[in-house]
Length: 224
Image 1 (cartoon, one colour):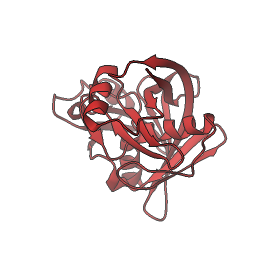
Image 2 (cartoon, rainbow, N blue to C red):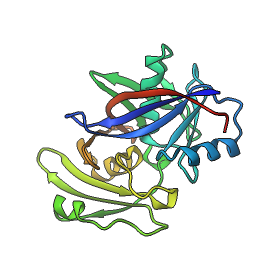
Image 3 (tube, rainbow, N blue to C red):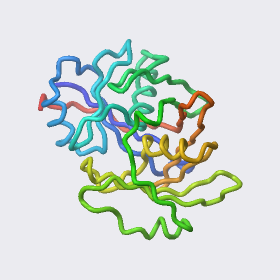
């Protein structure tokens, strides 16, 4: 029996939204096959398996594939390690070193956009069109967005990463990194039901993303 920590990442200002995340803090001996099997069984959009907490080394799996980098898993894991008394300045997913820090209530990471999965990014004319979008086919990786308030940097987004085994994501950090690289200006993303992602492109070519994390529960999990 091992422990599974469940969080919500990129929670909205009103406490709604946030993408569920599962994190195993002691998974150094787990094979890739076992990790993928457990991630598929849990059904979260991503599950994190920490290899070495003190060094921030970890693996990330969707229900269908392993990822070199993903946004909400890294933000959530950084927050959880700090909560557990093991704060780290850098996380180390397979893609490379990812700095992490806190500002007020938000937890942040900064990563190179080319490390994030690619998305077909479609700009629509209005938030209502984003809300009415029918979704993606069975093998797509689609992000639709529109300005909600362009002068204020407010963006409405939906993401359909069906290629990864996810019909629609509530909050997608990797897509936010890609959108920040495209827009090259600070923005606040409003995604899904009520999730909030703050995005800040940096002069060195990286894109920082941040948001609120909330603890949901810790529960025992069978070996799987």
